[in-house]
Image (cartoon, rainbow, N blue to C red):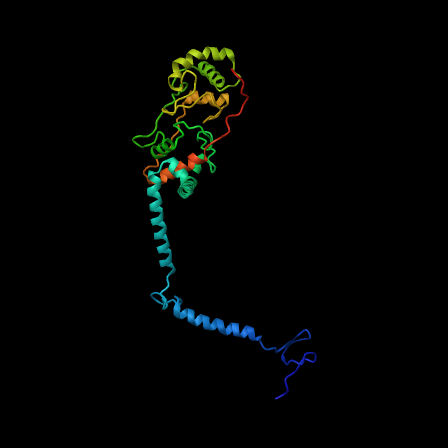
Length: 298
């Protein structure tokens, strides 16, 4: 047998492989690498014995420790559900003052309420609750049916013009569509509403509309146009508009009497979840922007 070829520079035997004049040296593997490799083999064998590892025809080897991640997750879920049930019982009966005094309970209510809002309410009211034409802004302090925690909770529970037996309900007549008022009268009444909101309006039209407002609108909106939260009647003197603040939008509302619908959530959510959602809305409400336009006294 011929003597193994050695590299002339390092004196290390070569493997006999050569590429473009470069010979491969037959260096031994580092000892640390070998020991790490052997240790990994030993660890693998021990793991196979202790832990679930090998699949079979009708199952798998469970290991001597009988470890099950599924069982661990199931136990953690049971503990989480038990904790939530405890919190729900407390939340359901707690007043706003009690919730505010308990940072953990308030944080729980806000977390649950925010999650529920994102999954069920944001599609209409917007991700931030800022609303859209026909969908109320939930970030301001203007509430058609009252803005206390109990009132918000009740509105969520029964809905507005919903299928619930106790739903909140109000009715804006379609003065134009149903022929109650003429187009000219609706135009004058639109100017009157513009004046109520503090903007410059046609004085002659406002004068003509005064008896129209007294006969057709004051019974709900009040003589001063400030509305009534007990009946869900909007305030016409502020800068918040559900269907828009332009003359065209106001005229359209008087003509067609839009009456939106909010579903009842009582059958879908537990009382504690409804309370959490109400807390979320209550805490995050305040300081919304009003309608656009110059505000000068009529």
